[in-house]
Amino acid sequence: MDFLSHYLTEIETELAKVPFPQKPVNLYDPCKYILSLGGKRIRPALTLIAHTLYDVDHKHSIPAALCVELFHNFSLIHDDIMDKAPLRRGQPTVHTKWNETIGILSGDVMLVHTYKLLADHYQGDQLKKLLDIYTKTATEVCEGQQLDMDFESRVNVTVKEYENMISLKTSVLLGCALKMGAITANANAEDADHLYEFGKNIGIAFQLRDDLLDAFGEPGKTGKQPGGDIIAGKKTFLVIECHQIANVEDQRRLDKLLHGDASDKVEQTIALFEKYKVKELTQKEVEKFQTLALEHLDKVNLPMDKKKPLLDLATYLLNREH
Image (cartoon, rainbow, N blue to C red; front, side):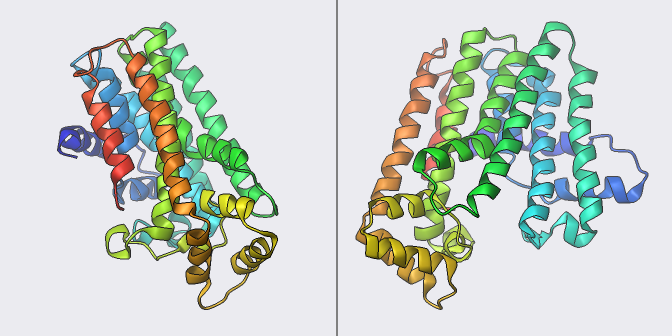
């Protein structure tokens, strides 16, 4: 991640300068708090990188990058409320530290502030293009979250439905971050679209890799509870794929495990994954979306050495162990 360090340092500096008002304290302090908890900051870094592909001076893309990161954190505040999550990055979530009403309002004002960032720093055709992709993406993220919640009460969810859900909930924001950076640098529309598709497909592969690490990652490296998704009964790619290819007896066993609280729930579920070689199938699916992403990156009309930072980032994200 050394190639990203200067971008990440600059993003942290700029986030600290975001001009949230001082009052009401209970509205704006939670906004500052969620940003202070840190994070990978991959999305805003993508915006800066995409801009730099066409213009070495990336200052003009900073407000767009901040917009993407504020939106991401707004969605985290609201997701934590819906999931009743007590912790975020090892610290109390906003609604736990304050309350749910404050969490909803603080998230709302962060969302409003993202539009102010764009309106204050861009104009004309460039502003319209930024608003078009950003508003489309914001809508899709909400659609993805609703689908994720709907899946909790559904018995059968297909792989296609699941991948569409993670594309909307997670991946489109990566594509949006890249496209916004291309727009701020006045890149041609075809390149901007290929960068968007690169980001979206890397995002899907990233989430599938996350599903894999939850079940098969080493706790010492992931820093997470082993089989957390299994314990929560989530319908991840591994669960859906296993359910589709298992025999009837094992399908029933898997359903019973996911909806029960057996002390060895994780071990039994992973045994089923191993029986049906779901780990290998998931890795193959990761590679499928990685290939799609790289095909779009190849079509961006720039020399490959210019695109190397994006290639390095994709490699890092898809080979990580945490």
